[in-house]
Amino acid sequence: MSRQGYDYGKILFQRDGGPVKDKKITRRIFLGIIGKLSILIALLAEAIGAIRAFIPQVLYEPPSKFKIGKPDDFPAGISFLPEHKLYIFREEDNFHAISAICTHLYCVVDWKPDQKEFYCSCHGSIFSKDGINLTGPAPSPLPWFSLSHAPDGSLVVDSNQIVNVDYKFSV
Ligand code: FES
Image 1 (tube, rainbow, N blue to C red):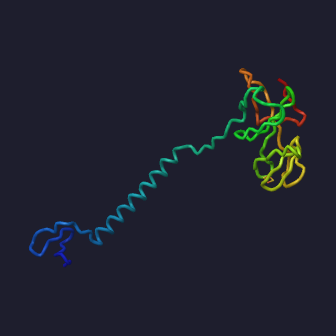
Image 2: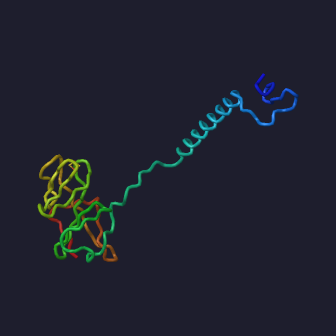
Image 3: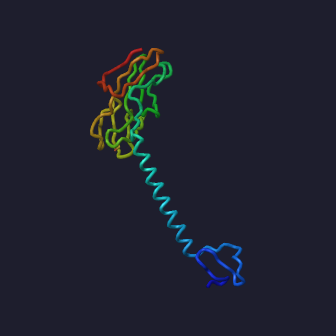
């Protein structure tokens, strides 16, 4: 017997025999709902996992060969291309491209024009203007990448083709 009336299973009756107007959620009903919800959530999670298994887990890397702009887009001296993590050097009509990614743990190095050096603020590696590692934990020089022309006259960097430090691309 409840405070409002008699409880016969799920249907409640008032003392005068009529059903209770407002539905009362008993502990049993509440626990039943929680149990069903738990099963539903578990099935849903299982279904999502099964669907994800059909989607290939591919790591999409940026292309190694990319356009960086027309030669005239680059003033004399050094330009930094943050989207490619790359420094472009222009000396008259000669160009070369040096990676801005530190060879220690892949932080982006900063060009220090006063010292004419690259500096990695992560662990203090210093590289010469040519990318040679001078001090710090960096184990190897900053790589130089090959340059070429696209049919539209743009410069193209191929980061898969590492070239020597005396490499120059003339336009
Ligand atoms: S990441 Fe550049 S020195 Fe460590």
